[in-house]
Length: 441
Ligand SMILES: C[S@@+](CC[C@H](N)C(=O)[O-])C[C@H]1O[C@@H](n2cnc3c(N)ncnc32)[C@H](O)[C@@H]1O
Ligand code: SF4
Image 1 (cartoon, protein in one colour):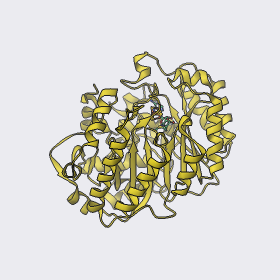
Image 2 (cartoon, helix red, strand yellow; image 1 turned 135 degrees about the vertical axis):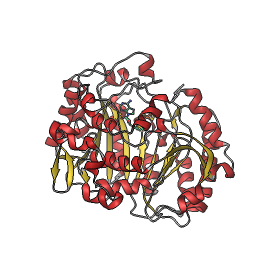
Image 3 (cartoon, rainbow, N blue to C red; image 1 turned 180 degrees about the vertical axis):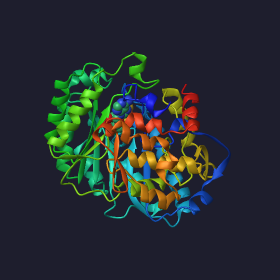
Image 4 (cartoon, rainbow, N blue to C red; image 1 turned 90 degrees about the vertical axis):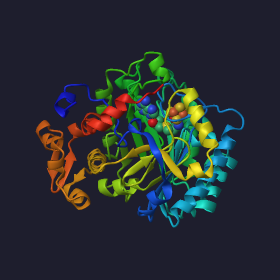
């Protein structure tokens, strides 16, 4: 669908947080050996991502690759497979240095202190460890946080603690399929603040069916009590195979209005907007990887460990297979836990990026950040003119969605709030078709 056609529709059409989307991944035949794939990458500043697909409950809105309350022995077998994967990847990547690390899921704090320590010990032993001063992010949920776990994380070098709050009102978290007592949330946030992480991040969702502008402002005001360094504001999407979809619940019609209120509230409370969803306190030192191009290049060297984790080299993205349904996720976790060394040395599922897809990825990821797309950096990377390569970019100023600032094409406020329209408009036909044809069942 063209940008012009998309602009006739409501703005919330798709979250382009990575490109190509995982629904565009397919089996590789034959499988690709990882050693030559990584040998041609610059491995001096890699991004290490560890996926821990376990949660204490499956939230109604969530389609992430995770499973609730795994049976006895499942986590242990998974951690043993992670260690094997670290050993194999240690040999594949040598020498390698990590410039960032993130532990996501799922809910990594679903694990015990001992299990968390075991993962970090594996990274030390097989991957050369994470150097002091490297930003390390760890995701958590209110129900799985404890003072002991937070202290363990602090001791292990975690610098950013990120928690999914979603809403400070129990009626809203119930409507989102994640009943959550606000007193427990407040307790978790207090413990997280006391633990002294450099960055506290809090996720909120807007657009629950029963949310009002007033109740949204209540959650935003509550969030301010902990002066988080970062806040993500996520518009609610009801995605296939989730609890909310089964209940046929729809996001509220107020999402655009709620977005604007949330943005204005945070800008008035000392936050800068880094993308449609991400806000950071103005006095917090800029992350050196914030600028579009640097961020993009760095993300291209992402080493994903665990089932569901994606890995990005310059021209090949790969992962284990993807599912949302309970049986599918559990099957993939069980498979991963039994992978042999030989299997761990190859990628058999993902997406090879053509030069056109690499350029699109760069443009999408840069444009959707407030810092915008540097046309000079694009030319240096790809040797062409982004405005000529992608006609849609030239249309943006006419619609009031972007403007030129020197050599950069930067979203206006109207463009930022249309991120979920402009992002999908820049997907290639081929990626769009693969996404449509993906069999979720
Ligand atoms: C991995 S989770 C966060 C950590 C933790 N598992 C938790 O839920 O507290 C990532 C975040 O994405 C957001 N999210 C996930 N699915 C969403 C959806 N369908 N619509 C809007 N936001 C969503 C939520 O705010 C969630 O906190
Ligand atoms: S939102 Fe977080 S806690 Fe809920 S199912 Fe998804 S990953 Fe798990």
